[in-house]
Amino acid sequence: MLLLASASPARRRLLEQAQIPHQVRVSGVDEDQIQHPDPAQLVQLLAEAKALAVQRTLSQSAVRNPSITAVLGCDSVLAFEGEVFGKPVDTDEAVERWQRMRGRWAELHTGHCLLPPSLARSSNGAATEQRTCVTTRVLFAYLTDAEVKAYVASGEPLQCAGGFALEGRGGCCVEQLDGCYSNVIGLSLPLLRRWLALS
Image 1 (cartoon, rainbow, N blue to C red):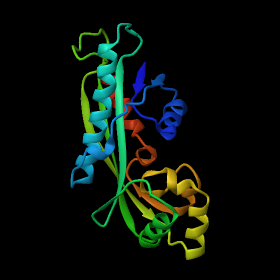
Image 2 (cartoon, rainbow, N blue to C red):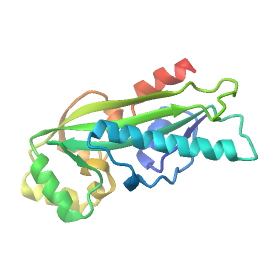
Image 3 (cartoon, rainbow, N blue to C red):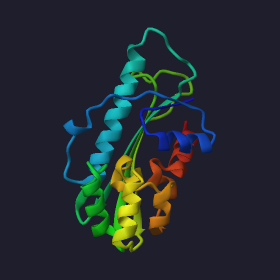
């Protein structure tokens, strides 16, 4: 069973829809303490920090759960014109971002880190360590100012890295993807399938 080191409801839904057995344990990592100028490197560092934090809690626990075979940490950011877009801080920032992004391409980076449940890596059937960043290019629709404001008013952009949810109303605001679809939602299911097949 996979242990997801993330509070993201979108990632949980992806795993549920793919029928991948999993549990969730939030890492508690202070993301503001991890910085890097390269967006792809940043999300990879964050994904690793989350997975390692949860792996440590398992290793320190007096009660072992043999059904846990891997810990998965993920983190996503949108990079636009060299700038990293996490979740917008408020509606004004979300509107300003969308007015800049409309009709343009951006890159959605998701860092992935898969670890065995034990620091000793001695568990039978435990996953081997895997780390990578998956990047998907996103072309945003050219929304009018009224459409931008209506989308932001829905509240959805304030909950998502990059200010949009592909699996929600934001799906209507994306014209084209170049790369993995599920990666934009929060984790690459094709990558995870390959990794779990190696375990």
